[in-house]
Image (cartoon, rainbow, N blue to C red):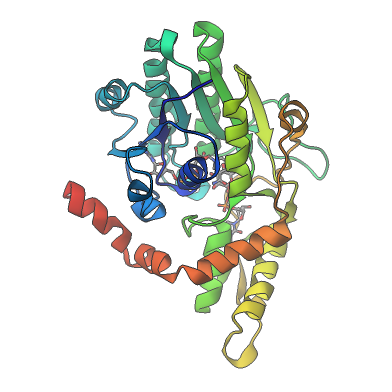
Length: 352
Ligand code: NAD
Ligand code: DAU
């Protein structure tokens, strides 16, 4: 399969920007990337600083909302798009509890718009890769794993909207023979993650000596996946001849939240001792639990391992150190987010 013009949606977000860097810098991909991003609060042009100059003619940015069907159609047609890797979404569970509307629009209607474009180009369209989440499966008890056969039981407006989009993608394959793939992965961590998610939030608060909020009893379990491993998994799937399938992607790193927060504190104490030598664990603060908080996620990724020989390369112990180091070394990136300055490029170019 030779993709010439790949539309990446949500490429200025956390995983999308890592994926674009990975694709251009570490793979045999020779085509063009057309990054379509609305630049919400989570879309940060700083995440791809220098990419346009580094890969002349191979990277194009289009600020657009995937809910705007006419605008997206024009970008799609003008750029002769032959494949889509779809990351764009509202992605934060807590925000979906406070205000679900944009989750319904972007995650469901936006995905539908993209599917319709791909369908209209049926004969020339190579692949619709939909990036989804393990949260569609709901919550596990102390035992067991999510497999691709696990029934969907989403518990938050976020996961329900992602489940709806997964069903649409599946339906477009079954009904219209659209070449699709769905990957459902666990919690990502690594460089460029917006500091509303647990790991970057805890790193930044701990550096600043602020409270580290742990929901409920802190014993909820997530399976952590280093973002580069996730990017490699997506590219492995895209390059394969598999179509109409879904694949679970996991990090083989089940951890309780409280254990992660303590690890971050201890590593930071070692890398950047706090003044007075005080342990940062003293900043841990148990707070009111998230409503509908899923207790445990754990991924069985044996299907992608068996069929395509993918498995995660990073252990949590090494990945978390790299991640903390990255946040310590990239204070400018952080300061621009904190001050809101990361949106100045958007104002300069689009006058908003
Ligand atoms: P993110 O919130 O960091 O980035 C989302 C990006 O989408 C942003 O750049 C934002 O500007 C853009 N976007 C939002 N609405 C848009 C719209 N209407 N039109 C165009 N662009 C829009 O998200 P992320 O963590 O990078 O997640 C990327 C994808 O991976 C999402 O689909 C998410 O559901 C999925 N996922 C994430 C994780 C994780 O741990 N972060 C795990 C599993 C699956
Ligand atoms: O499992 C994949 C999902 O992982 C993705 O689909 C989502 O887009 C992504 O945001 C992530 O969802 P979570 O809700 O698991 O991630 P979050 O970082 O928000 O929370 C991780 C765990 O930490 C969760 O059990 C809630 C808890 N938590 C989170 C925050 C922000 C805290 O205890 N304190 C916090 O301040």
